[in-house]
Image (cartoon, rainbow, N blue to C red; front, side, top):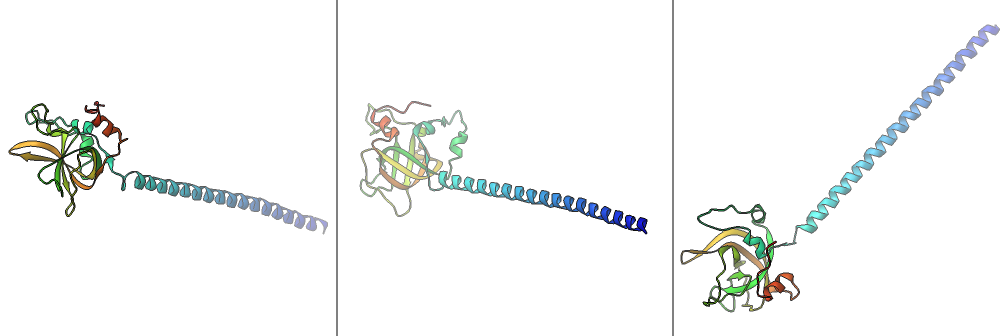
Length: 206
């Protein structure tokens, strides 16, 4: 009888020990699963946060912010009919993008409600002592449909859609760039491009 009781007790003790082992294993497995789930959640949240930060940067950096363009950038296109030089990738990438550039206005015809004008870095009025700018040193500016601007003698800043497109006058190419302008305003006197203009010399090549 005693042996039978001892045997039963041994079995019960074994089952109890086994239950403890299984329970401990289950707890560890559940803890591991919980930790893994938490880690995945944290990674997903971090990934989402990075994506949102990237989207915010893109919106802030590009949407509604014109690319600052200078005449030095324009001169990088070594325009020549004989050499047939390629258009720099940097300028090709700006095709159809909104840019902002400072310069001087040369009206094509009107003097009040100007709808088209040439933009140059230094004023040029066609006198015999002035060296005319090259086609890669001028920008043909066309105001958006329905818009116009008064003639401004002082430096201006033009904002609009950039295009690489030739403009010919009397059969001669006078410009290889065009901007469909949305805004034309007097430039800030502290604008570093304007300061170079007022010094009477082109901005040094970078």
